[in-house]
Length: 618
Image (cartoon, rainbow, N blue to C red):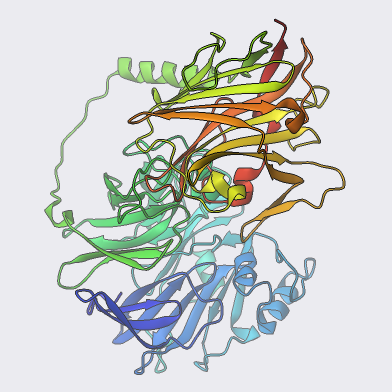
């Protein structure tokens, strides 16, 4: 949004007039430069001109014309992401310039995934004609910079980025010497900026992304990088501060534990910087599970906004949902802070309370004894090893009662919980010559056994359910990373007025299969069918439920032999109060279950992460 006029917004490659009171949005016009349209935008006013900075795989600086359209004047990105932003079909000038620079790694238009990750490119419209010409493109040689899918925010026209030069992290700055008559910033050459790069002093050990995740710049010119750990660097390369940032980005969030205040998870990018006093900016980071994190430019954690989609109990204005790509945060000239969220729509929020932040100072004494205790704790955590889970599947002489009373079931149970005793689950499992018997006792569910899904093949995505994942072939490799014939999933869920059992056989030779897909991948399950012969009993409490099922072994294709051991896992999926979306996956053995925003990823089996289930004789 325009800080001078918070009713003026840009989105979807167009400009809009918003009436926040009436909750209406009127289209004013297209921006006029739609190639590789960025994901989010920032107004920059400098040198008597108005610019819009577009951020995404390709970062573009556009000069705003009098009619609201944009004229691109500069762009930068990693070469890989430059091509990715153009659907792997970048302009001919880029291809020819790249191939001339990197003659040992030429690529052609349409080559998926090319060029490789690494070097970056800068384009400045030095002749002011708005066209990207080969002579105006500068490549970074062996230097790595400008990468990432989410873009790099700026405070003004100075392009300030992290880079890796000769294997070492550094900060580069391209500060223009004013703008020319056509409004094009007079940037130095990329070679000049790289030669003047400032090495980072004593950088911490980063994850594989090093200093190339999304970044933002404070009013004082410090560079905030969403690395792991998150770091802030002064223009002279000194480390201002660092903040823990494990489980970063989309894929990192899949391994994140349940949310804890102050613990950042799934950080995507900085939505914007906004002044809160004469020396301090506040900025907001969106997280992949729908939590937004507010910090100061001093590296102080302020608060978090919205509910984690894995544990949210209501689908309301405080639930943004997973994979909330897009969004912006800023302060209008009248002092109002605005936040627009990505994900399921263009929601606009006012953020109150930032104007009440006050600065304090002092000292904190840390003793040698405390340091030693912290070191011992860190060493102890490093030596902890996760052991494989194991359980028994006893053979019964008499079938248990299937009325949710618990009568006739074995005493032994498989119990686990999440996050310090939350989301407690106890499972009992048994068999006789004809059936498999399973019983789940689920606690800490505020909306127990609610699932309003309409597609019985996708009930694991639309609310509460329980499931068994089983390797029916005891001879199969227990360390297999992909399913084999005999591996299955049995899902029990409410549907309408009934309860249903759905069987997923993941590998069935010769079967056409059912495809579960998302925009970027798919998983084919050999056979998916409802088991009408399954008998199900459920009893609901205020925040708990019991679900029991008896399934014919023949329907499962499972022939247990006493003494044999197979791989298995038991799970519970928690949905929102309305039973429209799943929020949390909680499993006995497999702890890599943080993913709740990708259908194929959630249907996939991971037998190597299951436990051992031994067939016990009567």
